Length: 135
Image 1 (cartoon, one colour):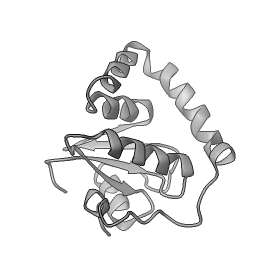
Image 2: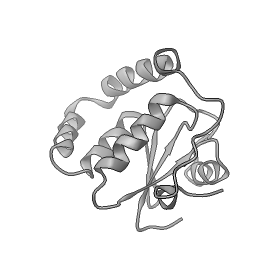
Image 3: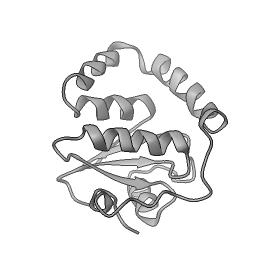
Image 4: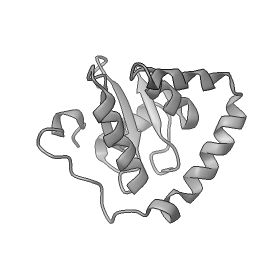
């Protein structure tokens, strides 16, 4: 895995998660992030290297070097690197993790019901393919 980029592992069949990845890509002006669905071989391998069960699709994972951040910590780590105004949301780090993660977990449990899911992972367009780690 390249150490030049942070890696975002996500639930590749979740409509909300796919929309979130597209949101990040549009705001990642410095090309800091690479992406891999947890269902992919690349995603599962990276998750395994970080001691994370890729079968648990209830969490966004941000991998930076040898460190992995999950749930609200991953979301805050991502917005922190997107620049102003999004990086201002990082101020929420002062909220205790158990409080942030309670809200994160509640949302994660309901995301399929609210936003639906696909039968298979999204296939990035040609121009975005370089941003996704392949199997």
